Image (cartoon, rainbow over the protein chains, first blue to last red):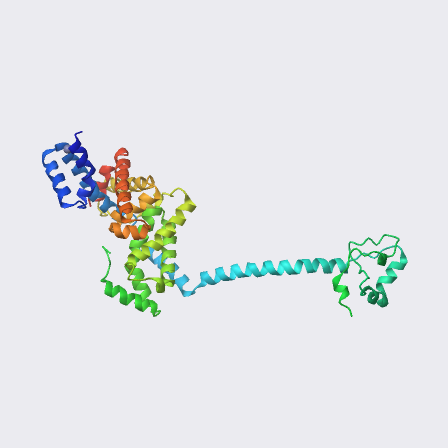
Length: 175
Length: 200
Ligand SMILES: [Zn+2]
């Protein structure tokens, strides 16, 4: 293929679509007048160009029924203004709220449950009496006192108040 | 816009009526653009159900966001197509491979006259299948470019707006897509079949 043919071929697509400058267009037109192989290629491209446009315009033409179906769907969603955004909003902030509640409530519940379900120590008997007596609870509120805590082993024979390893701030709020 | 269904002044009036929540105006706007938008979605997704979903979703988004449309920036059709293209991209990211819906091609309303022979109808359908198959051989970017240019008559400037790229890039994509499509159809013997599609 000659250099001129290569130049012409490179310009054939824009030539068919009339996108060339007048000078370039004149060059291609003159070459097509004299070169049968480039002219044949030009005819093929031009035919394909037209066929492609026509064929693509026919591909996927919807039936009236399909459009009616789409319109029905559009109407349904438009009838509920901002439903999608509202739903997203509700879902997003609802989830955040749920997480917050879980983050706050679960530790409290655990702590509360631990305090409520302190197993009654079987021995020594004196310890059980101590925690249930109101006077002892007041005594627990003093700075040196220690409340009953789940981690405190009640099975020890030593009195619970001798320990000072787990102060409970909630108990110290008592005046 | 090359194929604006109505003069732009009329579109402006229609849009103003939509913004005033005139329900009839929404239907008029839908009627003007629905066939083109559905066809765009189908040409890109090649699946009827996906095309219906994306077309519907695009209209819903457009109708709910009409206040965001700026006539100074683009024609309404370009804006609508930009919305649809974005949703098509999400869809083929989900699908990965276009689900070529041959059943739909088969059941598409026959463009050929009803009195045509079964052979002619078959040839017509084969041409449509060949073109749809050839489109699946293009990467999505080239498919968008060629469909917007040849299937919907957009200018390179408009294609550039819809595809969010420079006009020169749009032009080279169209050319590359055109050459690739021609190569695929030629190798599958379908190039001549396009004439079959147009022979009615
Ligand atoms: Zn030549």
